[in-house]
Length: 419
Ligand code: UD1
Image 1 (cartoon, protein in one colour):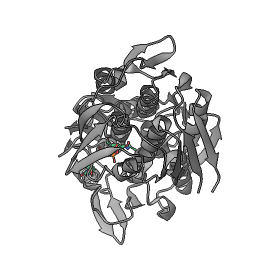
Image 2 (tube, rainbow, N blue to C red):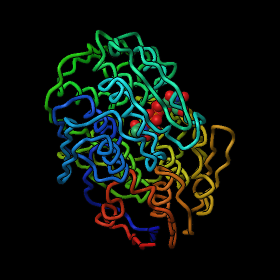
Image 3 (cartoon, protein in one colour):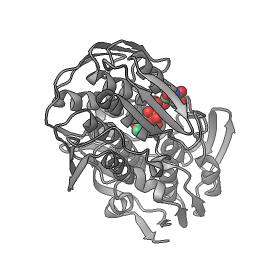
Image 4 (cartoon, helix red, strand yellow):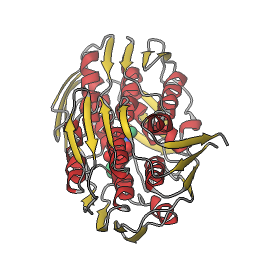
């Protein structure tokens, strides 16, 4: 398993090209299953999660033609009978093929994501949305089995108990192929949900309100060939914004959109970091000292949970105490003990972490535990004195395109050691 060795203390300066958003690419790849006509996705990020999703649809009979930063998906010969693909069990987003398979073929069998049965990160809201559209859903030995009525799925009112991103996407995907109108209430408002709607509209769907809590889908319209450009990754952009901030540097994030990072920008500004729109994207710079800032993660447009770990690394280097509350996922503080190895002083109480920063971080060997936790350790390593070795970086490659190369180009000292 590869390791990253980070030598801290370098100020970063330069431009970083922000890739297409992973969290839009995954549902949009699943969307190809809805139609027999080809779908071309542009600005496709080169990530192992994307490879996994492409392998999953290929296993369902989709022809996958990949080029640089693009893919054409032809589901003309696809079928709903592909065996569940166990190799992808660990990626939660694989459940997104359930809605399209069910809607187009009348039945679907998908491995439950997350390995264990419906547990800490359940998919119950996805399944309830499909039931509301008329599907019969059951669980059997780690598989979700879903069957549509003989006349197919029908439009309905889908009320989500939580504004789940994935469940909103499942509902939107299935409703696109259902007969009649669907109203999704308490929908997630994330920009990736709106981007999936734009992709589905390019295919011929009629969808209104994506990006608001109420989405209307007029289902059953004929779908045709389409091209869609994936929106830039706001989590990747936010991560590099923290990289600029934590090293007291200046980065231009080309392609990044400030409007998708409003809550993050506000937190960074409160911490003493400047952000402004440049000619090619977003410029982030820190010249003065960092200040502690309290944040609470929330569904969009609140502070994203996917940037919580990175912001915590930043706060570990700010003089004073900041309080970081996680309200979206339980157990999303696995980076805390690893940051502590680097000398961070963090106290955990339930869903809140008190970070007492300013004492300075020192390099140490650390272990990446998940995608965002691993990147927070690289960021902390950039600010730490001496050498930080981040083990298990395969987590990083799931969601960050060429992270080490992009950072090195801006002056970071990082070496990837094949393990
Ligand atoms: C998506 C993102 C992930 C991000 C998360 C929250 C993708 C591929 N991933 O994940 O990067 O961290 O949004 O912004 O887009 N929940 C249920 N039942 C369900 C579904 C969700 O209880 O059926 C709960 C989850 O356990 C969690 C909360 O709802 O506590 C939010 O999850 P959700 O918005 O669904 O996240 P994902 O779509 O999995």
